[in-house]
Length: 304
Length: 184
Image 1 (spheres, rainbow over the protein chains, first blue to last red):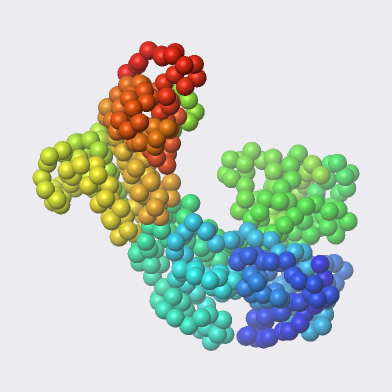
Image 2 (cartoon, rainbow over the protein chains, first blue to last red; image 1 turned 90 degrees about the vertical axis):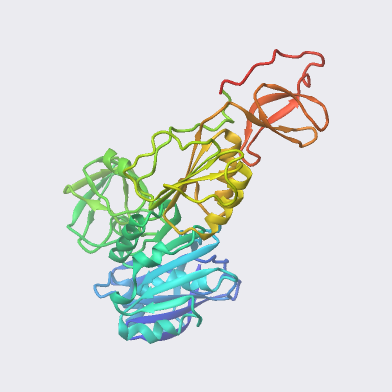
């Protein structure tokens, strides 16, 4: 669907909020808390498809997203920061939700770091969600983030590692609490490890994983059924490279979380960077999530 | 065996837990409680035992009845914090009552383990008048409320923690199978 940039607000030099409205005034599909949009962003010679959490409420008439300018930007966030202007029309894939709040939980412990706050902003707009939010950010971003939160004792900002005692926080939670995490991979790893150490079962935690597509060595992919050979460059994902070659593999989250883009591996060894395949599936060496994973061997043969 | 019956594993503590609460409707803790794991509390039932609430001695707390134990369990779980593992040991009616109390308190099934032990008696639900009959050792039992002779099917309801009892000759009037004592 086509959405128009209706407003741009600069929250910090590196973080901007975009309001996206329908071009034709038709009502937007509802986006439940935790949903994201995939924006098709023009780039030099190609289109970037980036996923951004929707921060506006479910019933809002427009979508809001908050975008941090990634330092080594793949192209998407740099364009949104440097070139996007009010009135621009973007092709946007309808909202998908891979990070809905755990509805059975009576309480929610939300832990985020940096731009990882975005999916929780829609959580906070739910009526009657019992939550406790701890957000970690750089001191210079504190004021901008604080303005995004409702005031109250349920939100705590941490601008230094010393103020958040994860172990104490996790140990004092009631049994009916569910833990949700979003932030850089290293942050989420620390939280998950601490929670496991405190006895939390994996069934009571979930994390949001975006931006897993990091570059790496280039490699060549033979697409067996299509009879096409695709070269995957250092700064692009396998999915991007296939799309650039005119192929249309199915995909959804573009962050290694949803499982939609799984393809059978016929030859070669994938370097898995996703959060979808189990250890056993990885060991079997017969599937790859093409949105984030790459190759350990110079060539891969995929059944596509 | 009917697939509607849950399958249980032998008793064992989950080393991923930070604290362990073992509840049993029997009068002794289950065999196999390792001494190596700290932070274990065991609740047992000693009928006609000490009054309420009995003190904890060496991690062991006896209750006068399963009813008292289950009421205290619900209270206890509302005060507990993440990291607890609950183990219920006993006949099916008791362990599923404990399971349902734990789910209501917010535990996830992965934090609860159930182990069948003790006498092979069943709680039976009369499907004609909804009466619950406790401690039934044989597969034919008279409903004390509607007086129907019930055949106890191998059909277990986790919600009621009971087996289904249906009029014994419901399929073919007059045809009454031989009564059998439960061996599972």
